[in-house]
Every structure is written in structure tokens, then in C-alpha cells.
Image 1 (cartoon, helix red, strand yellow):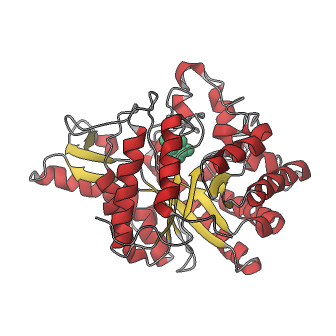
Image 2: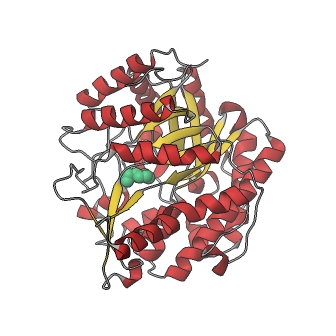
Length: 414
Ligand code: IFM
């Protein structure tokens, strides 16, 4: 039972990514990927998505009416820098208008600089496998914060680096469509270096900006808790998917196995807050046929509640992950948490049980400062196209949003 409630000034909102909602992003690697039959379910494409590029003001009106006092969004790199070193005044002005529109509504923006998409010229030059991409990303990040830094205090450099590496370089289901563990590790090294470089450059010019990284952390438990081989593979998943990045960031240098893939180092402190994207848990069972996946077959517990994407609904995992993050000694934002639920039947319970888990962690001293639900739109869900409905803009979700506001009982922070 909660005693203290949500802290004063708590941020409530939804999160989104430019390519999933804007429409019209034709200058990046994802748009190119979408043109090949078979890459996206039902042949869906990201244009027009939710037409948010045009409709942002009325979208924000809706969020405001749902009692949200913050919003997480991403900027589309390929719009801002359509060719190397050429920055579009039109795109920068557009994003300035977007951020100002949030401010006008009393909503605090959190801005992500990279959410999965690369300009085609970056992809053509080797994407995240090319070491120079780190430098190019940092230059873009520096320019953008110079132009827009006065409109937003919270910035996320990169969203879910391990998901980029896994989907794009291990599973081959996202661009660049590779299945090569060495390439995945090289990409992760460049992503980390990009974050470190961007952090140093931005902080030098704008020490007041608050910078973080959005990590997708999953709970991996052994499918058979007493089977040593399952415990080993679950621990290996936890290490590779969750802890490699966390430890590298904590130490300001690469840890094994990334040390085998390249060289990079950064400041010991390169996050002012911790961005947590939490969705689910997976049980891991040893299977000798899964050599390319660390010999781990991932399964959902029999009879467990699950989303339309077959992800287990496991609110306890949010509590467990938040407790484990206490050691980072950073303010925490839940930068994503949500459910694919076409019928909107399980979303209210999902939100309630996850908020309860979060509140339990807060009560036990975990410094959570805000919660961004994924998401406010039924948007373009990458390789799933429009088949997976994460949007919380439905009546049931509206009830949840009102409930959130009541739970926090807070006016929007000034
Ligand atoms: O839609 C994605 C988002 O882009 C990154 N985090 C997970 C979400 C749901 O799959």
C-alpha cells in the first residue's frame, strides 16, 4: 500500500518518435527499407503515419485535455541535416514551433535526438558500423541544441541502442538487415561513442541542459528456475542486453564483450538522468538449436497475460528494474511503457498495475521523476506497420490519464 503518493512536480505524458508519427520522412534508411515487399507487415508504410508533422498543435491540445504536463518526442535527423553539414532552416524552425507549442500549453518537452532512423547519407556511409557516424551524430546534436536548447531542458541522445543492434544487426529485421554478431557489437560501440561525444559537446556549451540515454531494459528469468543451463543463458541475456551498456556508461569505458569490437571511452558521468523503457519480461530456456541467440530460447510463461505482440504483461518487472537502477544514483524517468492492445481491453489494467509497481518503488526511495506512456498515437510500429496498436488516445486510456492526474494531484510544473 502506498504511503507517500507521487512526488511533487512529477511529469506525466506520452512518448513518440518522429518517424512513427510525422509522415513524409522520405530521406532516411527506414523509408528506403519500407519500399521492399516483406519488410513491413501488410506492406504498410510510414507515410502519412499520424500526420503529426502538420497536426502537432491539435495533437498537443488533446494531450493537454488528458491532463498531461509533459511530452517526449524525437527530432528527425534527416529533415534537419538532409546532406552532410547542411542544416535545414525550415526543419529547425518547425521543431522550434513544436517545442514552443508544448511550452505554450504548460507541457515540459523531453527531446530525443536519435530514435532509430538515420539519414540516407549516414546509412550509405556505413551507418552505425562506421566509426565516423559517432562524430557526425555529435555534430548534429551540438547544432540542434545550439538552436533549440533554450526551448527544452531534458534531452535524450539515443533511444534503445541495444534494440538497434539486435533488430538491425542480429535479427536482420530492421535496416540495415544484417545478421552478424560482430557487426552488432561494432554498431553498439559507435552508438556509445556517439552518446559520449554528444554529451561532452552539449554540456560544454549548455551545462544546464539535462541529458540522458533511453535504455530498453527487459527482465530475463530462467524458464526453469532450478535448471543451471537456463540460469546461465538467462544471465547471459541479462548481461548482453541490459548490463553491457549500463556498465560501460557507469565506467566511462567499454566493458566485455564490447572491448572486442572497438575502442571508445567517455566521461565517467555522462547521464544527468536515467531514461528507462520498460515493457516486458522473457523467460529464457537453454536450447542448443539457438546458437545465434546465445543458446537461449525465449518463451512466455504458460497462461500469462500478454499483449497483442505476445509480450508478457509483467508489472512486477517495472518494480524490479527500478529497484536495480537505484545503484545508478541518478534521477529516473520512465521514458516508455505501454501495451499493444487493439481492443483496448487490457490497457487500463496495464496502466494501473504498472503505475502501482512504480509507486511501490518510489515509496521505497527510488527517485522516479516522471512517466511517459508509449504512446498517445496509434502509430507506425516499425516492422509491425500499423497492426500493433500502442495508442492510448482511446476512451479507456483517457480514463487512465485522468486517473494519473488524480493520483498525482499536481498542477503542471511551471
Ligand atoms: O514503438 C517502439 C518504440 O519506437 C521504441 N520502444 C518500443 C516501442 C514499442 O515497440
